Length: 476
Ligand code: BG6
Image (cartoon, rainbow, N blue to C red; front, top):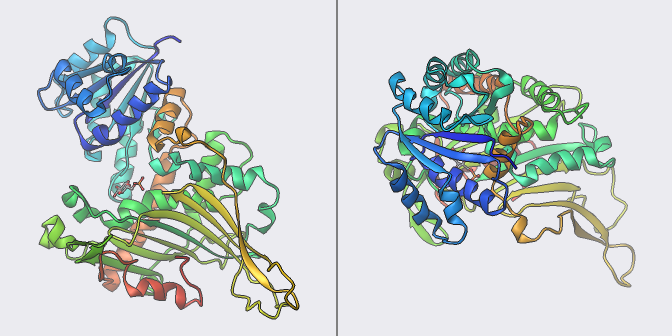
């Protein structure tokens, strides 16, 4: 295969590049999936040189076999993205010995720099080469800042060359939603408000805010997780069948879901949302400190590390179906799952059927990747009458562990192939911000403050009440 692509990573010494991008590129290389990438040019402000950078990455890889050919692709260039003159050296590098067929600019920096970087790429003449740009989340901090970023990026790149990453879309089971819903004929007839009682999406994390306290203090769980990951997953659960698997056809359908989200307003926010912040507690038997102490920022007293919402999609298919969303840090365990709970049958034929076990489809995104359909069957044996017993049908592919990949591996390959299906279009991100901004405004108007919860639990008690008020409960 020809060496067609130069990958340029802005933020090459940053956390994302070191923790996710370079390890994913290395795994792709080992799986012989990186042949078409000629160079990986990492940019940063610190004054490394290429040999020092390669040595540092070699230490991280810690695997002599095959690593030379990977390290040989890495180059390091010192560049301050705010300085246009620094881009001359980048331009020189990209043109020598000869330009690649495609250049991919991966912006793994603070989003406030996205506009400037794109403008500098244009002014320095680098974009005369066929180019794509990858933008990491968060795209802004609210609708206004997101619009500004989109406008500045789109003044330089066509939307068809902009890849906005939400790494949840790169997770195997999230893509499996498309296969499950549109590759089988049995789910679609019941995938609506006539048959579905409620939908739940949980993204629970046991880690705290790690080294990102400053960022997190100004962000909070609603902006950090719901605006992107959870809403993207919700789109795939709730969208109408697309007419094809073309990227824009799917993104059109996702956009309709985002635009149909019922606004949460000052009148409804108290009933439909819960904010929490973790306090001292224990995870896996180990004591952990509360958010304010761990982050060392007493001023973030009202930043939520947990949020639960009672959302709804106001359209023909989903009217009156509560969609419960929750996410938080320092919860009892790390797991992400989607639960589609079907309505109970109209009356009970069986003596021991208390009608307490409605059918459920449980989609585990992580740590396990599985899909399970919860049903009941006859309890085997000679007992009098028919007694019921719950049974879980597991719809999990028989993959061997080697096939497991990180979401970033899938998404990087898609960027190289120019496939935007698993990336967010600008209007989707803006529609998501519009809904989120409404909630934040309502919190401010009404004064919805964070409620403490002990680290190692599933959030404040009020989150249980959110479902219980409807006569429902979280699937834990
Ligand atoms: C990121 C958030 O987007 O997703 C982090 O900024 C969060 O706060 C992370 O920890 C979770 O990703 P994953 O893949 O570990 O569930």
